[in-house]
Length: 392
Image (cartoon, rainbow, N blue to C red; front, side, top):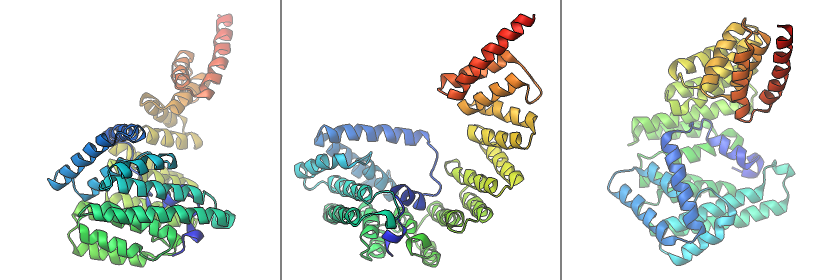
């Protein structure tokens, strides 16, 4: 497969193989705090601290407290956020600790990110040969460090995961080999499959037939049902992305997003329901979009966005009483947009109730969150209140 034909941008590349990113969860917030601490360690050349963190992660893995997928996530987290500016720091880490697996892996990942940045965000036809040359140069450095890292860990699954992506950039035809090596390392893990599948869609020159064949192999292997379900849902999500982006078939895309969620109906995958509703909206299937938002609200009553989006659709169909109820629910959950809308409804009497005090209450909440439209409405509201006072 030739990535130059298919890679439109770094952002697109990420979106391709992560069609349904999980919403932020408490454990994700904790991970972010740890990763920020690691960034400080890397920038200050606290390599002893990084070594201690690596040792703890490896001990957790070897003693069975975390599995291979979590190991991969945590080792990758030692070098985040990705920025080419950290390459000299990672090189210093490798020099200080030449046998550190995490150091080699981290440096390889930084060069990979730098290669993507050098490639740029435009289509291949709009990208210069100089950009491609720079991308190849940096990708080769990533490849070298990732290959070197294989010698420093008996189960280098995280290296194979990243080698899949580097190989895709360099078009060396080894991605399947790296996937096979990862599966041999741990047939119960699914991160390598997920990375490989992301670069195996038709837009990358691949096919769903190959993915289905690999899924069949995984079903016959040692992969736990939950991880297998994640893969099956991912493939459905990738198909939905292609229906949306390549075939411009919003209803077909929505149906696939729904199937993907139903394969793994967990809150961290609720984004798939939002994507389904969005596609129904594009197709002007308003009732079906409302049904999906209603489904989200029933399953997850704290989803402010679902209330807001359903309220907006009710507003568009002039069902103002229902719209107001949904905007109020969203506003109470903290949405500045919803607070602004509730303020507007109470200012104008839309929804059957005109109450300038309540309007001010909600608009002030929205404005306090920096919502500019609410600030403008507050000015108008002050004039309205002044006029009402003169009448009395």
